[in-house]
Length: 151
Image (cartoon, rainbow, N blue to C red):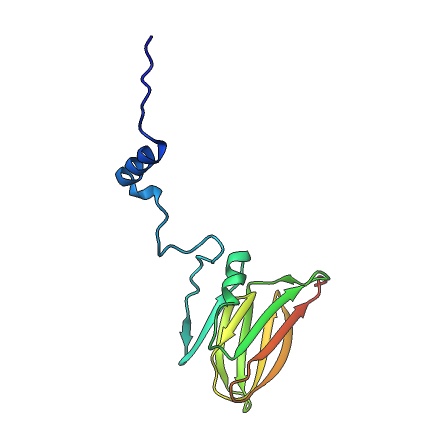
């Protein structure tokens, strides 16, 4: 049996293969493995824009890159402060008017609101939690609502 032995350098063989199969090349505009491929989709209700999500590491990391939302809410449960989703949320203006009513959101919700004082009423499995926030200027208000493990 006679084996064929090429005198061509390996770099030439690699160049030919890459030219024949460009899919083997990394795309210049493709996100690196360090960046999140998750695209959070803004929603709107009553002229108010919001984002909801944060389930999984990719989504929670994507929220860290988001700017322009002046109310950041997170929902958690238990002694380990685990993220909690499927929360119903109502955001009320200072006069008690419901501005935003969201069903089954979280564990992270970002909202764009005008400056003002707001009440947040959140419920999960029949348990209600409340918070307030005063948004002024370019500040970001943070509301963290926590449920215990007990019903």
